[in-house]
Image (tube, rainbow, N blue to C red; front, top):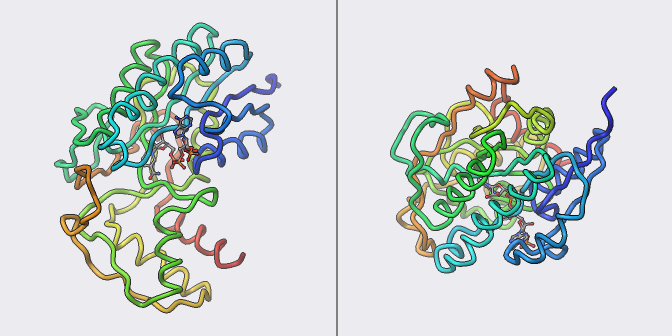
Length: 295
Ligand SMILES: NC(=O)c1ccc[n+]([C@@H]2O[C@H](COP(=O)([O-])OP(=O)(O)OC[C@H]3O[C@@H](n4cnc5c(N)ncnc54)[C@H](OP(=O)(O)O)[C@@H]3O)[C@@H](O)[C@H]2O)c1
């Protein structure tokens, strides 16, 4: 039996980081989690001071400036956290010969391709968020090509509310529901992501870029929200709204950053390398909503 893994999780207060820290501990890892309050990635001195003295086998960076519009208006902060810190983290891991996995995004693509993007497709980010995350990927892999940049999309899970939670909350209050119906992607459950990431923590040969999302027919926010509502109604959740209306991306007056239209990540590489086939997003959403309804 191999020795228990010592795993550093950066961003352990976030939606994915919290799920990963919990899931890895449940699988026997010794987890050293750092929230934003514990460690500010925008501060290179603090990063070096905190991580350099630690002994660990692997690190997963789930911390990021994820507010796309905030990034657009604060490019310096976006590049500091999403790019410069990632390179520094990679250098620290490399010196320690520790495995480094960094979480990236579908927003590295320009969204003009209607079929699923492969890892080999060129990244052409539209926004500062996308550009800073892309620079994070390239910095990580320049330090060590055996490190892994795992791109995910539309992440949902119990540790921090996301689109599903927002649409269900609104549906309990009003019948007036709308969501964007002309932008496509695939949702990703943090529960499944933790299952997929776990075997990758030890596998040094699996490096480079990797797409990790649920499978199934790509959906719009409107379809995603409608499915969540249908599952909630079937689970007996009291709802005032049962139908999600259509809204265009262009009508979103509060959006500042440009958003890519089609960002469907293809997961064939992951399946080829691990044998794991992600389950359909409709199934993962149904399970999540059923558990919410049972609370
Ligand atoms: N959510 C999505 O739909 C989505 C889609 C594609 C890719 N991703 C990627 O998936 C990863 C995980 O995202 P998530 O959904 O878990 O988002 P999240 O809940 O916003 O988690 C990000 C975490 O990073 C922390 N953070 C922000 N600035 C920091 C800093 N300067 N120093 C240290 N920590 C900082 C945040 O803390 P505070 O909140 O306390 O500031 C938060 O805990 C990110 O890399 C993101 O780019 C997410």
